[in-house]
Image 1 (tube, rainbow, N blue to C red):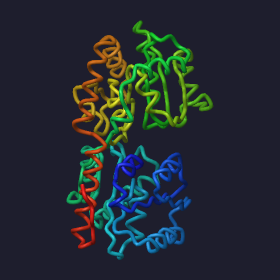
Image 2 (image 1 turned 90 degrees about the vertical axis):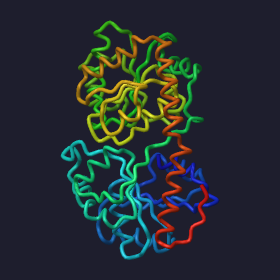
Image 3 (image 1 turned 135 degrees about the vertical axis):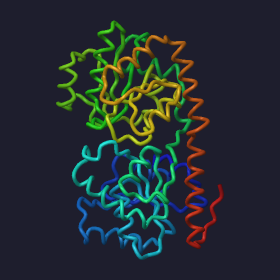
Length: 365
């Protein structure tokens, strides 16, 4: 979402620069391709002398405003700009259904963020549920702004050709029905829930193939392949790992699932599927239910029977029924969650924060 926002903001009015606390990851090349400088700090530990590198960077570039992105960056930005007069806008992209499910260091950073949140100019959440959960933990409610993720309807759109290409890639018949999970392999994403639901779908005598795409969704992942073997799905599950052509793969799916157990804010993978005209079955985590509305199916997390039931319902609708529901999903994204509308909300926020601080601003939106 950060990369999408960077591409949508008008660089005639915004002088943008990205700082990564770690490495450039999978998005560094894309950020630089937008003509935006990227500083990589390789900070592996929060120590005072390491954070001095970030402080020196801020002083060198003297930003009008700092937009931090996720917990560790939020805390780092606030600590290193403290006393400088530079407004910091936090961005929180995670729900807190179960704080104890997070790593101990992440739990500590989240808790430390509560009193620190009072020093921010604003806190952007991509989920209403996430905002409420954080405020119960002590995050400043007066700083709350909810801006959902935005989706590019030109990049993600329905495609009959994508269906043919995907089935050729997987080596299955053109008539084969494919259900996809687009997520990294992480306990929060609950791949075991997805696989257990897949097993039940096949046991119900429905014919389907299951595609898992994302970091760690590959045959070299021993834990994942063991789960697939234990559910007897070796010949029905296809693993593609991390891909750079998601916009070409997703329109080829018949159904997209979200199996997450917790932690979701406003799932990009589901919005992208909806923009592609693909109906979705999601667990009720974060604002996934709000995102799909009545254009998909919403079930409780950690309940493979319920997820399987939702998938079976979408399978039984047939091609025509899924097409109708998918087009309604795309229309919902166009009306409520377009990238253009969301980027205007961010631009308006930056303008407002700058003006409140008496800072010079020439933003048009």
